[in-house]
Image (cartoon, rainbow, N blue to C red; front, side, top):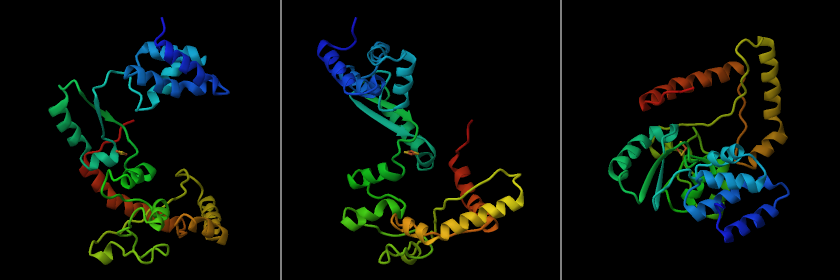
Length: 258
Ligand code: FES
């Protein structure tokens, strides 16, 4: 017996035919099944597997990776609450508890706890900001520059110790009276027992690359400023950041799990 209705089975076959490899159609078929049924029961997974020539376990593996594909019935309103690190320190668990207490018994509302929804940074956070769903966001300059230039958003402050050469008109947080200085960095790490001369040689090679004009020009396109630290200076930066942010993470109650 087919899970898909006759009409949707025809659609499903058309979808599969669009792909050079049938298994590439797993996700579109999962969306089709969810549109039909509201969620993905085992029969849907089995038929998707059959149509795409994979095992049911493979189809389930793909479908279970994406939180927007549901494997249990949902109410008309689905509320996903993230309790991962960023949201944990900003009250995600409390929001979840409140919603569960007030709405868990309502069949029209499904409350679910999810891992990072990717709304805490990067492109998804910007989408929410540009769409007017959140009033403000903290993002690297590289992500926001083009939107600021086009007038889609307004940058209120930069968190560095001084103004960015790419946003000379934007004051720092400190200039505006907030004693906040946060600088994002990328670093190279090696195993702890690596010989000191190898560490020095690697550090020197990275320094040469970072300070090369070509590298500076490439980084500038994304609003990044190269600034090299050697092994000792960088180790001090990491130590200082651990001392600064460690208590914040501890105070949040976050506990690392394997
Ligand atoms: S940690 Fe919650 S959305 Fe990313």
